[in-house]
Length: 309
Image 1 (cartoon, rainbow, N blue to C red):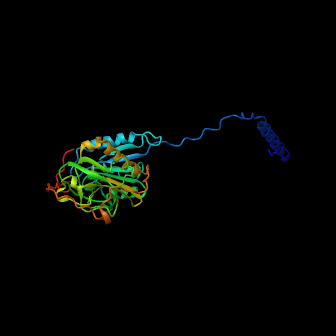
Image 2: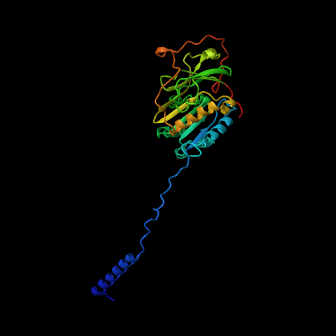
Image 3: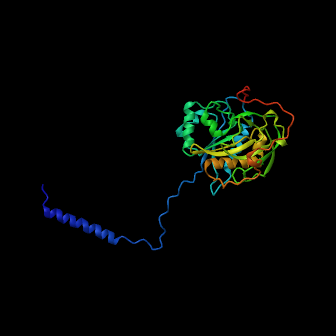
């Protein structure tokens, strides 16, 4: 049955009146009522992936390193506890775009040999280009000799080392978060790497070895960088050659050094304006080390058989 125009107009008028009366009769909120609660942003700490796959020599300090990094992540930073959370793996299948997107930085903890295939390498390159970070510890420089991009990321490739012994590290830059806690002359015992070439022209050196304080053998470099950092291909890279011994990861100064490097690579702690102490000799010419008795050069991943974990 057709509805007349007059009926429609009357119905609309009635509905409008009801809506008006309902709004007019609604109680006003109290003047002192609290505003709606704001949405709390996520406070989940950033994550770090510790990668320790070995295809050559295997360091028995790797479990100590993983445990130390987990402990270092628990220390609060700017109100967040922990400062970062840690996942550890030796499975190269973790190197996919989707999985790496969960992390602010990846730590190569004494990796050796060729540990990633071409697809995994490409995913890691994209990870760094997205503005994330890389941390290389000790044998990370004994890794991926046939990957030119990684060579530039790590800064220098391992060549050899003398026997484990005590030496003095000269801390050149104490403004960086990984060296601000260190003395200008830092005496410690470790396995002291020397490298295929000097990375100084390519990176920002944090510390170097005083070769007059130990027996470098045939691997003496004169100017001997041992820890450094740089920005590379859109991301951040930090490396320390320390960390061969289990005791390193119980040394509070080395732990502070490592934690600062991780936080910097994550982008959590910025780098202070560069000022240095203990610089090399004038005009960039390194001091000539005092001649010492040679010691045997020790091989590593490309020369030595793999040890069992």
